[in-house]
Amino acid sequence: GAVVSQHPSRVICKSGTSVKIECRSLDFQATTMFWYRQFPKKSLMLMATSNEGSKATYEQGVEKDKFLINHASLTLSTLTVTSAHPEDSSFYICSASSRNNQPQHFGDGTRLSIL
Amino acid sequence: GIQVEQSPPDLILQEGANSTLRCNFSDSVNNLQWFHQNPWGQLINLFYIPSGTKQNGRLSATTVATERYSLLYISSSQTTDSGVYFCAVDLTGANSKLTFGKGITLSVRP
Image 1 (cartoon, each protein chain N blue to C red):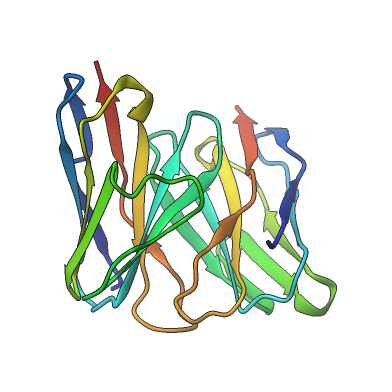
Image 2: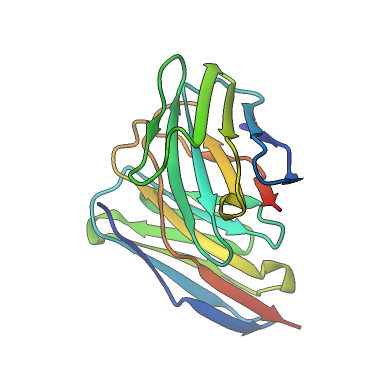
């Protein structure tokens, strides 16, 4: 149980393109999902907390107009990297938990490469 | 904010050896998780262990919440254990965000 699915696993696209990444909880409902970014050989850094039915909460330094988050249902959150540029290239990974005081489960991540 | 420190930063083992990975944190936590990130980037849940001791095969973990540290033990290491081990904590457990340590890079040599 507690499976989180993330798509796509890899994206290569041209500069200026907008890219949408989906995060789904397959066998549980998640009122809150989280989006992280990871640079090579670095740790995971939280970008934002995605709240079902309301606006996302962004961490300091994360541009909310660049990284659009939508959490339209209890099983789906999306991250859209708008007008992506090479510096947006990174590994993006989402997580969710079924309820309070339960472990977070992570998707397999999306490797984004902007040419 | 809460600080999470992992040690050692790098570890090289011969296959079959045992090891202990440490995670220190600066505040009281309601959630602590250990992960293994494989070469493809997948984060594998190892333990959800805000306190106490748990074992899963060759791996075990202990968290002493009052002293603000957690230990991950790997026994009889295998080459497939190679990768990065992360400790992550959250303060309230109320669907709160996880703060990750910098990770420990483990290389197990045949």
